[in-house]
Amino acid sequence: MEKTIKRSILQITLCALTMLSISCVKKTNTTNNNSSTVTDIDGNVYHTVNIGGQIWMKENLNTTKYRNGDPIPNVSDYTDWSYLTTGAYCDYNNLPANSATYGRLYNWYAVNSGLLCPVGWHVPSEAEWTALETFVGTASPGGKLKETGTAHWYSPNAGATNESGWTGLPGGSRFSTGSFYNLTYNGYWWSATEGSDISYARYHFLDFNLTFIYGDEDYKVDGISVRCIKD
Image (cartoon, rainbow, N blue to C red; front, side):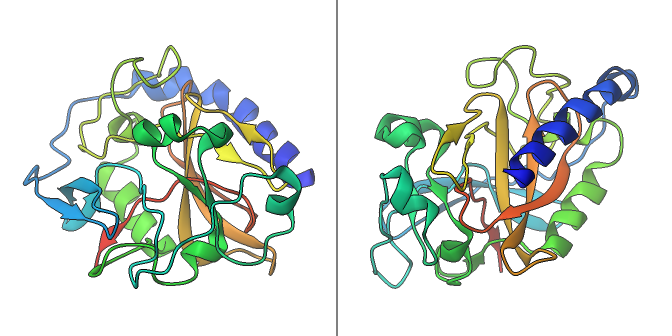
């Protein structure tokens, strides 16, 4: 509960920066849009984008299997989810239709398996997240990473230009309680890096009403989105 409250306070407090950030937005060439594709073990096809020399997936991960073919448990029960200490995934609100658009939600134990992304790909470390954020720059970095419009993001989707081509989507999250929150409002993505406590891992998020990308840590049992980066 303490980490959940912290997450909410951070988002509310930083909303005051939105107007200043929007005023600083300017067009820049932030990506080499040499698009290709990669396919996971389930047959899901992902487009890719080159951003500052890093090759990222443009869609959230949607696999139900580790790359060695082992199934990832789909845990729908709220109580069972809250006690997990091994890898698992879920669909937002346990509705597969949500995953078709926003990808599936994974706990950090699945990330830590080292087998979640396709062969030749991995979950980005904090250093790789920092490199992405540095490359897109300080003027509306979140806006440059978000999909434009309000087809998937809640209005106003502040500052969204998707200049980077990263096409961030708001897949929401599943908290350590097993409850689901913030589909269409926030996108959260795991880092492969552990947090300051054995229970926590790092993540990064985009917000419908803010123009930056922010990093923090939360419980490893939380379910959030994954974007893979090429080795």
